[in-house]
Image 1 (cartoon, one colour):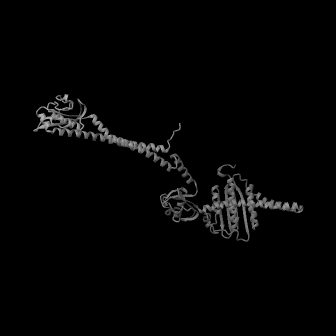
Image 2 (cartoon, one colour):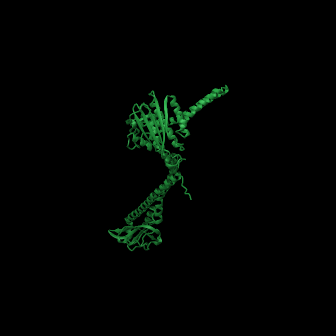
Image 3 (cartoon, helix red, strand yellow):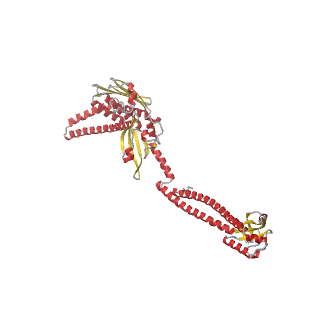
Length: 532
């Protein structure tokens, strides 16, 4: 059975009101017990004081000395009893015989309760016992005449009176506790309501899920992401950001640091102050060149921080180069289509003018050219897609005066699309690099060799271009480095990455002024599985 969870609002109310109730209950009980003790002690002190004062009255000592109480003493005892709210005031002789009592019929009888012996021995004390008037708290005081004890005085306060006084003293405590509890519950309700509003109505599980999704999202993107608070201190940085910062030489903890300490050339003053965003700016991070965007984070019209996203400019340029290669391939196909349509128009015009002899010669020449070109490609390439791509490229090269020669065996059809894309990337970039290398030569010669060794396809391209020193090869493989100038030199880097991802290998040899030879080996089966 599915367990039902109370909404956060009610959980907050229950927890906070329960805590308040427990705290007030404990406090109230402690105060009530203290008030009860204080009230009892106050009443006991009142009884002792009344007994002491009454014992020192001359009429008391005189009555005990003469072994008789006159009406004046009884009236005095009654008046003091009524004025002080006492249950009784009893004067007794050394035998415990009452000389005064609120009930006249009990005068002359023994004092009842069993707690009178100590006062007849000269002791002063209080006790609780049950007498003829019911349970009471009693104060005893000996009476002396010329230093000789002649009797005692007992003052009693009814237990009901004491309990009433205790309740009266505790009533305000209980009322105050109840009012405080009610206010606490009301306050808990509004606190829970405000907290719920602050959390935009989300429950803890929903918040936890959002945090997990945010973490997964931040770690899933390839861009570096850093978020700062309104003071410019970094509060969030994903794994990509820390990796790029380490490449730039910053190895300390990122979170908690000010953005200018981590990235000196990056400022967020404009975003935090004027709430203006800046996109796709080139910023230096150590020796790296980044493309960064800075966006203010606005909540309820106030800027609470800024978000910085960045990526290595070389990676973006390499991606653009790769996309450009795909676009070039598409343009090549469009050019073929356009050329084919032109030839159809020519054929259509000859048919319309009934120039059948010229039409036959034209079709025959087209056939010879097509058979010659496709035949050359077909001898080495069974895959139609790559064959068509190479055919268009070689036609462009020959029109530019480049002598292209093909060698080697015939490649099988490439069923795996990933392998096909990799070979197009390799061939496209290698042909483009070779063409650029031969631009300064009067005689331009290009040799392409296709071979297969066991489960590997081997592609070799040799040009007679300007070449380069093999000592510069590691720099050429780096993204963005080129001897042709800035923003060039991504071809070899793109090829190297594509070959590495396909578990292949390559070898480059070059001599300045004489040309370059590139040999690439890729497994015929991708991912260690069989071709599909």
